[in-house]
Image (tube, rainbow, N blue to C red):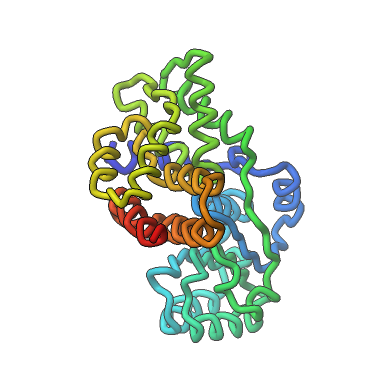
Length: 308
């Protein structure tokens, strides 16, 4: 087995519609289309199952010829003109419709989207398009109007059950207290089920489930806050690195906790607003940076400037 296949996110990727942690209403809608699906636009956060649902549709429900393109890598007009046009121009051998899956379609260029819009109209009788994306506003209104948009939102309860079933399948026993920790893990990463499963595997490397309960961070936040007001950011960084176990190295959650701590702090409104905006900015950056600890440290330094 390759290392890729050993990843739980791939090993336990749903293969059937019933395996997905989506609502029954959405499952009924999908099965109700039969082979007469419209052009579709699946929207939602990363890891909620948009691409998996698209693949299940073409492989197990429609059982049709399909072309898969990651539009974040191949996002230009040449991809649409050459690959997509060539695929939809020819009829399938069984007379069934063809489907083009454009994954991460919100990464398509403006010219690419214009070309795609024309193809969706010209070959509507023989081909369908399934687009996935995280950001609806990056997809043109012209394409949105030609698609049935569906927001993919997994069920929290079903996500917890799936994680517990994965542990059971892997032969990993959990106590009632550990099951509570699994629920907490899902809650922290929800709705990104892919991340939930990845984090679950990380805590089962030894063949047993090991996840320490998160300790109370109040004292830690008090120390960080006082250091910010006293402009001792370098001391804060050293303290945080030495005490990562207190917050399980979850720098994103620590930013959220720091924001809440700032919100209730007794400081001037102008200073409080500037600090909250600073923390919010670093929360947004945290999704794109390589080192979250450095991002948090930069946030502390910027908060010191706000306290002038």
